Image (tube, rainbow, N blue to C red; front, side):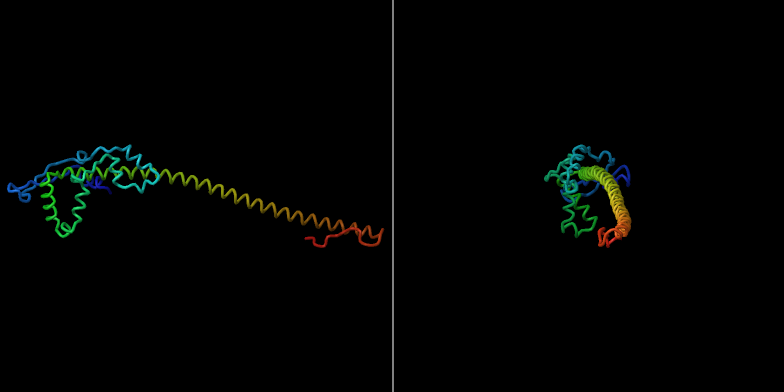
Length: 215
């Protein structure tokens, strides 16, 4: 399940957290919230560009960054994105802290840099929608390929059955030919024996040849 689907499963509205710095410039002293809908957080994606990217021959090797770029999601190294937050949370400094301490530190950092939590959530939702859309296009493309392959497999299997039938027919024809030829040779030998018997009353010696290897 993607992030967007997970958020929708939880509810249609989110409580956006915003840190409020203390007057002395210290860490945030309180947290205020406001309500924002999932639709408000969702960004309009450039679906046709994402679709075109999914139509590339090696669609599964396309980097996520290319998908985000095609979808119109801008990544500025000077601004906060969900990827930047992810990388930050993976550092040793934050990995050694408990959840409450991490939240406090992150909110303080975002507040100090005048970064809105809402913007990071929007970025996450937009990226999730982009790769979900890309997956949908790729899945459809792969389904079309699978259908085409199965159709071709069915055609080949039909051809194989026809060829097997053809082989069986040819073998049977060869068998019939051999049987009929054997019967004919036996009749021929019998006829030659009768001629040899009859001509023996006229001349001495073997005049009519008789096959000795009849079947």
